[in-house]
Image (tube, rainbow, N blue to C red; front, top):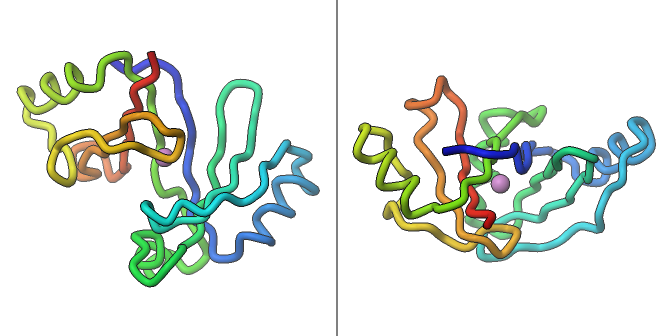
Length: 135
Ligand code: CO
């Protein structure tokens, strides 16, 4: 079902400092910050040859990342994202096998303009998993 690792998302308490670390210390190619109000995050993409790292910072009063950072004040890995070819078929297969899809169970448009879902961390060893449909 799952294909490539699309990205690893890391919640950071200081976006400028995190950008500086990836760009200057690690020598990576780093995008400009993008505000995604519908997701309650500002995101910076760290572009690697084989995948991406996304640095997530809270945006607005109701950000899901704010609560996560309260629990992880130094920052932490927030989720990992795998590509799937057919998200509807993936959801059906996962649900049939008892895995829980978060929210209303229907795909939403994610940070890259493609349909995504999230799977319950309790079903995946404590890791929040995002699936993104990439044709
Ligand atoms: Co993501």
